Image 1 (cartoon, helix red, strand yellow):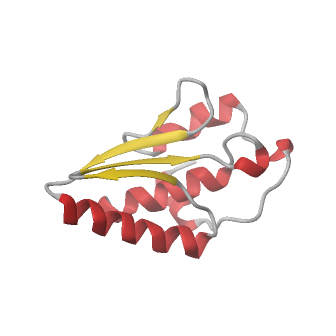
Image 2 (cartoon, helix red, strand yellow; image 1 turned 45 degrees about the horizontal axis):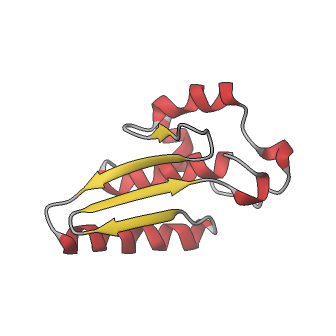
Length: 113
């Protein structure tokens, strides 16, 4: 899966463990997302973003919020002065789904179109 392919996709409602991505698929798709990592426990994908100030981080979070609402798939966000950590997982599948990769790509495209 490429970055462009992920950005072009739309999230769809997913429920059940059958929609969780296999470890092999996660490992195959992760390189398409520059700087994104798999959590040590395999529960989510994440990236730490840096900004020159608070307002830059806040603007990023607000733009990300718009994407999350449009896709109906919401990240966990830890934001502070000049920093933002974004984590995606899909609670309804008990792991990581294609929706997490779609939204991570769209998040990445905010800063690296």
